[in-house]
Image 1 (spheres, rainbow, N blue to C red):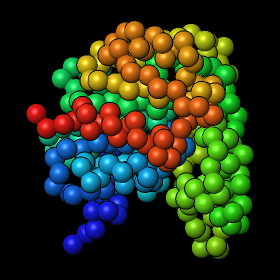
Image 2: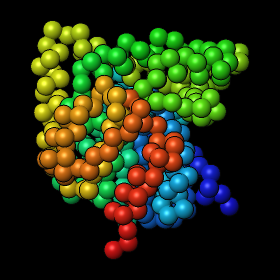
Image 3: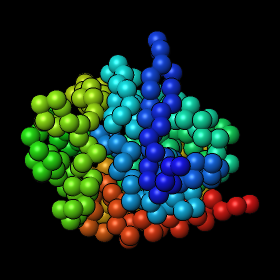
Image 4: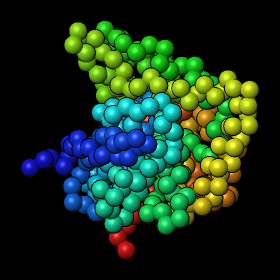
Length: 299
């Protein structure tokens, strides 16, 4: 029998234009527990980012951490499909598989945008939503930093070399011990036949950032922001928003707006951190755990 204290790797087939693709997910806790929280990672990350949070939640909840298409153990797609609508559709397929009685969502950065997209749908099943350093309005300077800092190097000779590089583009995650950073970095790498290590994701996931150089970039960004605000305003689930004190993605002004409209989110600022809190330390895990347990309590 599988140990519920360890993650189990599962897959589900999802639909995209022209065919099917396999999405992998990591599942923690009792496999028949109908109270489920889905944790979805950021742009270039993968589901094992949530190991510490999942271990804290799994005594009471089944925790499911997908590798979004193009990342981790999931299949890659055509570059034009690496967009929130495709990710949201994949998650609907996953939710049908999970058959949750009560459903929570934790989304970091991109994973939070997918959570807003699902939470804003009519008859959404979400009963608790945690948005980790993300909101409907994304600061353009942060987008440009991400576009400029990722995928400049993909192959490494050792874990330590890879971890050093990942730290150089991830300082917004805040202070971590070397052991913690290696724990976060190890699942980001895939060993090759020659012993070298390759980052786990399809470099094409970053092609969407090409729009930042388009003449109508400001117009496109404004239209996307308006659409996300409309979805956010339709969210009915109790919502908690975490903001890194030094975030260049989620501004304090956007957080205040999120507290005043839509689900009127609770807001919590994480000191000494930028984009985004890694939810590894007890100080970051505990408010998420309390919020989920409170709003997913048995009726």
